[in-house]
Amino acid sequence: MPTPSTSLAPPSWREWLLVIFFGVAITTFITWPMVPHLGSVGRLDSGDGRLSIWNIGWVDHAILTDPAHLLDANIFWPHRGTLAYSEMNLVAGVLGLPAYAFTHNAVAAHNLAVLTALLLSMICTWLLVRRLTQSSGAGFVSAILFTFCSYMQGHTAHVQLLMIFVVPLVMLAFHWLRERPTAWRSMLLGGALATAGLACGYYGIYGGLLLGFAAVVFAKKDWRYWLALVGAAATAVVLVVPFVLPYQRAREATGAEPDRTSPDQQISANFEDYTSSPTALENTLVPIHWPDFPHEFLSPGPVLLGLLVLAMAGGRSRGIGRPADLSDQRARWGYLAITALVVWASFGPSLGLYALLMDVIPGMSYLRAPCRLGVDVALGLAVVGGFGARRLVAGRVWVLVVLMIVCSVDRFAGGLNPFVGWPLAAEPIPKVYRVLATLPQGVVVDFFFPYVRNDLHRHTRPMYYSTADWMPRVNGYSDILPQDFLDLAAPINDFPALSSFPLMHRYNVRYVVWRLVDYKRDTATFDALVSRFPPAAPYIRPIYKDDEAWLYEIVAWPPEAKR
Image 1: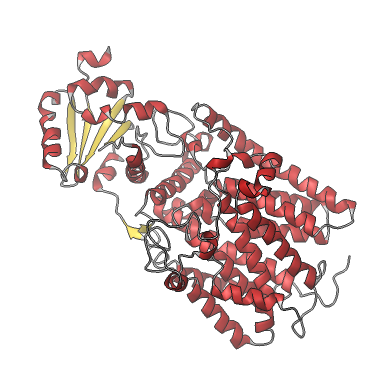
Image 2: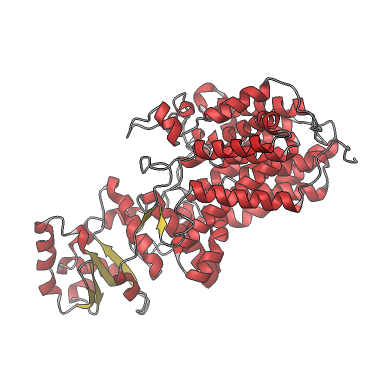
C-alpha cells in the first residue's frame, strides 16, 4: 500500500543527530556521574548492584575467552552451569562487550551496557511515538518520560530490568508489521521478541503479553496480518530455544527449580505503587516512608499526567498528518485500552485477568512479580502522552525545548535513598586480588564466609572482587543456592583450624583470602582467627599481606584431610 502524502517522512539525518545528541546529554545528566567515571563507579552499595556488575563481567569474559562454557560461571564451585542460577543477561553483556574488550573492567562493561540500553530506549520510543503521532518532537518527549520512568529508576541495581528498550522495540516492530505484513517484517518482529526474552525473562513474557493485547486491539481483517504474527512467534521460539534449553537444564540440575508460583506468592501491584515515585519532585510531594517502600515505583508523574489529560481532550494539531496505517483516534484510544488491561493484570491473580493469563501463556506461571508489568504501563502511558505533547510542540520549537527540560528535571532522582535513583559509589578492588590474578589457576575461598540466610547477599562482594582474577570460587550468590553450599557455609569459617582441612580438600581449594575488615570489627573474632594459624603453618604458605587482606596458598594436607 503506498504511503499517504500526509504521512510523516522517515527521520532525516539531522533528526537522528539531534535525537542522539540530546539523548546522550539527558542520559548523562540523569545518571551522573556514571559517564565521566565509567570504570570506577556503580551500584556497589548493594548486593544486587554488585551481582549485576559481576554478571556482565563474567558474560563478557566468557565470550572473549571460552564462549562454549558461558554458563559455567566462577561461583559455587564445583557446580557447573551456575550462570543459569539467575538471569544470564546475554543482551546486556553484548552491549557492554566493547568496554570490557578494551579495559577488562567489569564496572565499565556494566555501565556501558546500562547507558547504551537507556539511549536505545530513547531512540526506540522516539521512533514508535513519532510514527503514531507524526511528530518528532512529541516522540522525543515521550522517549524521556518512558526511559526514565519511575519503574526504571526503582531498578538501577538490576541490570536485566534496565534493558527496557526491548519493550518499545517490540511495539515498533509490531506497527511496522501491521502496516505491511510481509515475511521479512514478521521475522524482524520475531527477532525483537527474542531480544526481549534474552534481555530479561520478564520482558520476554510481559513484552509478548503487550504485543498480544496490541494485536487484538489493532487487529486487521487480513489473513496475512495474522499469518505474519504467527510467523513472528515461531521466529522468536527458534531464536530463543538454543539459549533457553541449556539454561533450563542447568537450573534443573540443581534440584532447586521452583514450582509454578501460587497466587498467594505473587508480588502484585497495588494503589500505593501507582502513586509512588523515587524522583525528587514527586518524593517531595508524596514522601516515601523507608524502609516500608512499595513493591514498585509506578507513578506516571505530574508532567505525564498533564500530557495524558491534554491527549484525551481530543482535537488535532494543525499541520499534522495521520499515520499511514492507523488513525489518530484509534491509536490514542487503542493504547489507552491496552494500558488499562495491563494495569488490571498488574494487580495479580486476585482480580482474575492475571490468573487467566497464567494458565494461557507459557512460562508466565513461573514469574513471581506481576507488578513488573509496570514497564508495559509506563510505555502505554508515554505513547498516549505523546499525543498531548504533540499539541503543545506543533510549530513551537521553544515549547519543545522547555518541555524537554521540564521532563528531564522531573525524572531526575538524585540524592535520594540508596535503594533508588543513581547512588553511584566507588569501591576499588583490593590489591590482593591483583596479586591473585598473577598466580596459577586454583579454587579460591574468600573469608569471612557469610552463612546466615539474610547475610548471604554479602557473597556478592568477593564475586565483584573476583572480576580481577576470574578464578573459581566456592563463594556465590544467586536466585538458586545449592544445598551443599548452604551446608558448608558455617563450618568452612573454622579454617585454618586443622579440623576444617577435610572440607577444603573436598572442594580442592588452593587459595584462601581473608578480608580483615570482616574480622577487625570484633577483637575476639580476630584473635580467634590468628590463634588458628600456628598449628596450620606446615600446610599453608603466606603469599601476600597488607592492612586490608591476607592471601595464603594451601601447600599440603594433614593426613586426616584426605580420608
